[in-house]
Image (cartoon, rainbow, N blue to C red; front, top):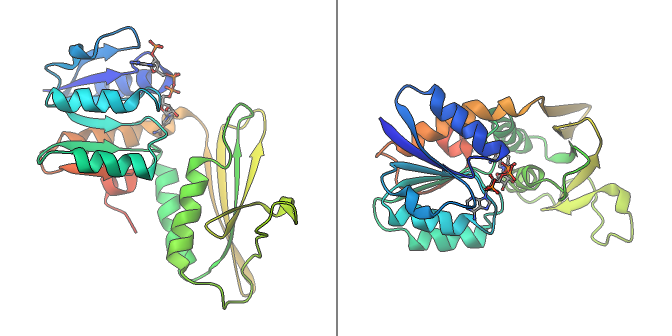
Length: 249
Ligand SMILES: NC(=O)c1ccc[n+]([C@@H]2O[C@H](COP(=O)([O-])OP(=O)(O)OC[C@H]3O[C@@H](n4cnc5c(N)ncnc54)[C@H](OP(=O)(O)O)[C@@H]3O)[C@@H](O)[C@H]2O)c1
């Protein structure tokens, strides 16, 4: 049995992680921790899942590692800089798996977007989220734009690539420039999350559309991540569900 401690267990994502752990035969829900609990309760856990807040998450990760546990981070807000610091601090044999997005469909869509961009480089992204989302563009849209941008390479000499204005004052309705890709953010009541990546080639368009219907979309990614992180074959810092699934571009 792999003993799993969930920090942030009372939250929306935390309670979902607990449900997934309880549904697995070879995982045991060893501890459910919240903001009022001491991290000393992590002692004895094989695997710690952090689903708290970006300002709390580093201390949870440090404590889990100090207690000899392997770690999964689902908390948002781990910047590239913070991840680099974490990587430098890891001892040999320690494992931290950071998953910014547990959705299987979203992860696969992003990988496929990179594949399409290699051949059809003109692209814009439209992301729609519920009205209460505080940030824009979404983290997934930013990551998709970065992957698309990297995959298509230098487009400066190509015709037909959407011209993104550098200054917001010139044409703000043309979207926000992320790594040279225009990103348009819609915030609408009743929508959970949707991302459309629209490519245009000569005489054709391709639209890659991912729609989140419910948070159930995280279950398969959470389950795959728990298994991946529990395996002694995986050590060091591993970032992204694409790495867990073995489908990175
Ligand atoms: N990776 C993904 O796919 C994905 C998906 C959705 C959300 N997220 C991210 O996951 C995180 C949690 O989201 P959520 O929607 O579940 O938020 P939430 O419902 O507000 O839950 C946050 C949880 O963190 C706990 N917490 C806060 N401070 C703590 C501390 N010092 N020690 C221990 N626990 C503490 C809270 O415990 P109390 O109840 O005791 O206050 C609460 O249960 C956020 O960063 C969110 O952006 C990631």
